[in-house]
Amino acid sequence: MAQAAAVAKPPKVPKRRSASPRRLPYLLIAPAGLLMLGFIAYPVISVFYYSLQNYNVTKPWRNGFAGFDNFTRIFTEDDHFWTTLGFSAQWVGVQVSLQLALGLALALIVNQSFIGRGISRAMVFSPWAVSGVLTSTIWILLYNSSTGFSRYLADAGIGDYGTSVLSDTGTVFWAATVAELWRGVPFFAILILADLQSVSKELYEAASVDGAGRVRQFVHITLPHLRDAIILATLLRGVWEFNNVDLLYTLTGGGPAGETTTLPLYVANTGIEGHDFGYASALTTVAFVILLFCSIVYLRLSKFGGDHK
Amino acid sequence: MTAALAEKHTGTAPEPVRTPPKPPAHRRRGRERAFDDVPRWQIYVPLGIYLLFTLIPFYWMFLFAVRPAGSTSLVPWPMTGEHFSKVWNERSFAVFFQNSMIVGVATLFTTTLVALAGGYALARFNFRIKNGFMLALLCSQFIPGALMLVPLFEIFKNLQMINSLGSVIIAETVFQLPLSIILISGFIKNVPMTLEEAAWVDGCSRFRAFCAVVLPLLRPGLIAVGSFAFVHSWNHFLFALMFLSEQDKQTIPVGLNTLIGADSVDLGALAAGGVIAAVPVVIVFAFIQKWLITGFSAGAVKG
Image 1 (cartoon, rainbow over the protein chains, first blue to last red):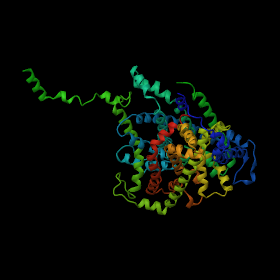
Image 2: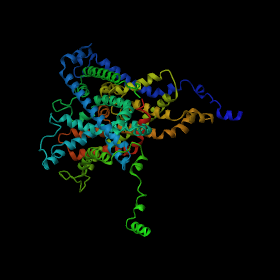
Image 3: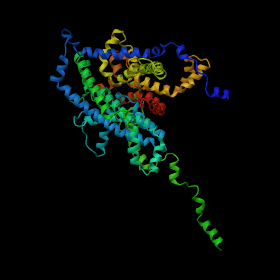
Image 4: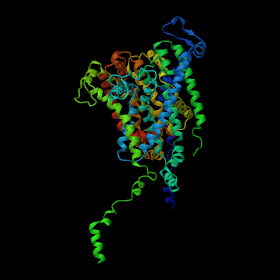
C-alpha cells in the first residue's frame, strides 16, 4: 500500500533550477535582446532624434538642430504628405478587406476534405513564398501592352490595343491591387486555416443535430472562434501593407503622376533619393504615430481577447 | 410456382445483390466530418477559379522564360535556354544566386539559434523582465524596416560593414527574430515539462536534456521557422539594395530590379531571372507548407 502511494506520487524532482544559475534566462535572451537593442531600438531612437534636425547631405551647411520645423512643414506646407497619406489609407483599406474576404473563403474551402486537397493547398498557397520584386516581375510580364494579357485579349476581339494598365492613372490602382492580392490572400488563408484546424468537430455535430444549417453554423460557431485570429491577422496585415514598399516601388515606382505613392514610399524617396534625412525622419515619426494610434484604436474597438465565447 | 417466378425475377434483375455494396451517401461523408454536406461543386468550382488566378501568372513567367525572343505563342514549344544563359552569365545572376544563398542560409542558422535560446527562456522560465521582453517583441512588429534604413545604414557604415553580406545577414536576422521567438516558445510550451524533468532525474544536465528530449520533438517547428527565415531573407529587397552598393555583392531581388529598371525591358531575361528567383523558395515552400499551418496554430495566432 505504501509502495503504491510512492509510485503514484513520484519523488520530487531535484531542484535543478536552483542549481543552475538564476542568470540562465537572461543569458538565453541576451543574444536576441542585444541584437534588437542595437538594430531596432537604437535606430528607432535615432529616427526620433533626426526628426528634430536639419540633416541633408546635399545641403550640409544648414545641418543642425531644427526644433519642430520639420513637423510644421509637414502639416502646413506639404501637400504631398496628405495625398500620400490618403493613398496609403485607401491601399490598406482595400487590401485588408479584400484579402480577408478572399482568404477566409479560400481557407474554408481548403479546410473541407476532398480529393486533391494537399496538392491544391500547396498550389494556392505558393504565391506566399514569392517576394514583392518577383510579384512585380510576374505582373509586369502580364500587364505589358505589347506581349501581355491585354494583347491576347485584343487579338481575340475583347478590348483594344491600349497602353499598359500600369501607365494609365485610371487603372494603375486596381492593377497594383490585383498583383498584391495575388500574393497577399494566401498569407491570410494560411493564418485562418491554422485556426480553423482547432475548432472542435463536436460543436458542428451538436449544431447539426439541433438543426442548424451551414450558414448558421458558420455565423455562430466558425466566426466567433476565428475572431481573435481575424483581428490579429487584419492588424498585422494592415501594418504590413502600410509599411511595405517592395511591390509598389518596383511595379509602379509610385507613378504614374504619383498615383500610387504611399507615405512610406514618399519617405523613402525623400530620404534616399532626395538625401533629406531630417525631413524623412520627421515623416517617419508621423507615420509611426499614426500607425500606433490606429492600431490601439483598432484593438480597443474590436475588444481583442475579450470574452466572446 | 412463386419460387420459380422469384428465381426468374432475380435472374433478370439481380437487385438484391447490387444494393448492399453501395453505402448510403450521407454515411460515407459523415464519417469524415459531421457538417460536411457541402456539394462537391461548391468546392471545386471556386477552387478551380482561384487556382487559375494563382497559376496563370506563374505559367506566364515560365512561358516568357523558355520561348524564343519575338515569339507570341502561348505554348512554350520549342523551348529555348537562351534567356537563362543570358541572365545567368551576362547579367551575373550566377553571382547573385550565390550571394542570395549565403544570405539565406546564414540567416536561417542565426535566426533559428538565437530564437531557440530566447524561445526556451520565454517558455520555461519566469523572470523579471519577461513581460517587458514579450511586449518589446510584439511592438517591434509595428516598426517598418523600410523607414529605418537611414539609421541602419549609418550603423553599418560605422561598423565598416557596408558592402559586406554580413550587414544584410544581421539586418534580416534582427527583423525575423520577434516572430521566430514567439513561434518557437509556442512549440516548446507544447512539449510537456515532465519529459524534461524525467531526463533530469536520470542525471542529464539541463542542456543535455534539452538536446536529447526537447530538440527532436521540435524538429517540425524548427524546420518551419528556419524555412520562414530563409524564404524571407531570400526575397527581401531593401536591405540588400541599400547596404550593398557593389554589383558583385548584390542579391537576386536587386538583380531583378535592375532588369525591371533597364531602359528597354528585356522581357525574356526578366522572366528567366524570375524563374531563377522563384525556384528555391517554391521548393522550400512546397516542403514546409503542411508544417507551417500547424506551426501557426501552435504559436502565433493563439496570442
